[in-house]
Length: 290
Ligand SMILES: O=C(O)CCC(=O)C(=O)O
View 1 (cartoon, rainbow, N blue to C red):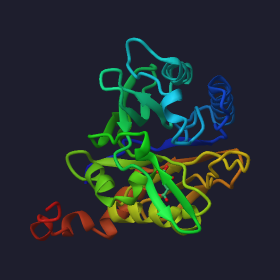
View 2: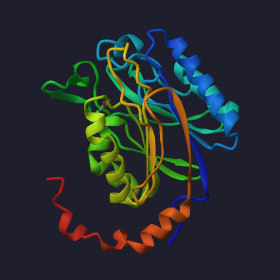
View 3: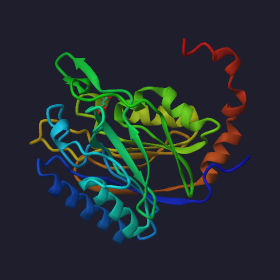
């Protein structure tokens, strides 16, 4: 069986509070936390930041914080992240930030992804917008100001391929399965996320574990820290789940960095023991998108 992850790799998830209205404060905070992670575990190869880590997560705030994303003429947050990635020579899943497309004036919730040279190698625009209305729970409507992305994202890295989704995207199993299947063959699905205190306790761990066991890959969820003074109360509990569905690292609710090692043998051994890949009956599922 060919390896979809080339070697053991070390990963760090930065669960930080990035909800200050001052963007520079949030960026500096992110830089400080990445520095702490790299000091504690200097051989870390992949670092992940949370959803909307550079500004408040609120539909009324996305437009005022939105930046144009492109590699040639880097905006404030992209420049900042690019420098962090190259400084430490890490693959950086740069959480997500509000993005504006200057041609259409549309706003997206976008995850920028960098290689160790600081190049922006891909972006994922959240494709499933978080529009929910749970009585006595939470009402949120991203589509009031955001537009959905139109592509799925699997990014090539020096270690293998990684699928990227943002938060609510994890509720749609097809997205992870497409990244995990040929020809994408991702070894992990990474979701910068910001669940909340209503849906977090219900579904956060369940979704991470489900997407992992469905596809026998790692799932990695990185949340902001909980801040009861902000309008949105993030769940926290950033985590790494292995291909068997076991949570191998998990944060609490406050600011914290968690570390994990991803091991190609974990994927290969479990796929050998439970060979779902050869047993799938795509001859029977082909009508699924109708
Ligand atoms: O799916 C959920 O319950 C939460 C999703 C969310 O908070 C988001 O997409 O930002």
